[in-house]
Image (cartoon, rainbow, N blue to C red; front, side):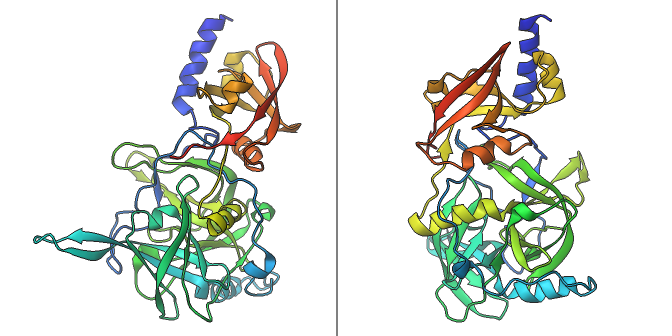
Length: 406
């Protein structure tokens, strides 16, 4: 095989599917954030505010103390009901009281240049502790001058933005009130494809409280890219994403994806736009796994921002096609497509076309494997990468940095 010809083919493949930074490629585009940008209770087809552009860094959270059981659990965990004819009803009754509507209010100016506030968009959120912390999507609250939080019981409060993280599309809002309901956070690592799940949120910002849809876990460990903004900037890559057949509609962004125990296992974030030109995608929604969201929420509450480890590469998962072009028999891993100048990866000597097969002895299997492995660490930690470079098998030690600000 002609090496230079092989590399040209591989570069075309890489350029066609490169990930920004460390997320794996599973781009179901155009995916659409599921918050609605129409003022409630107006019904419209337009969808949510656009996310902030992604910097060249891993969209992942660094390890921090997770939410404590006393802070998270609002009700004792219960086993799924044996009678599935009432299971969804019981889940809805348990979780709906903690699912809120968040109205993004922004200031505009009238013809006399006088400011006035209008509702610029509506999304959802879930209260997850007795302190009134609400987990939602960053694109629900982005650009807001004020936030209004409405509960299913009819109460409404001004919301305080505790912190937001555009790179994971997560945010925490807080309300000050007594007797607040809260939902129990579960363990998304226990999910299996085919498990029943329930999506709860304020679809289309319609009056009458949160709506409920049901489906199954269609796939796990997805890596997807959110839409970019109107100026052409790319949206963030999200990893460890749950794909579900439970319908997720505009206005559902930030609402919970719940298992049959009534535990929150994901934060609903977007829907797939079109399966092919002119044909709407059916039954393809996405939720950020709660095990990814919890550490980010902890950091936002503790320090007001999320700190992410930074490797500094762009890559694609190793596919049979790319493996054949590179002349390797390796089946799992990722192929480095670009190394950022001055990044930890560059200082460690990683090169384009390197195949990373394992981190700290753990093989990389699946779209989100590299992002999840790096996410378990914090800036300053040193990782040992197993790398195939041509006919050589190498070990490369990389000391992670802190992800640059967007």
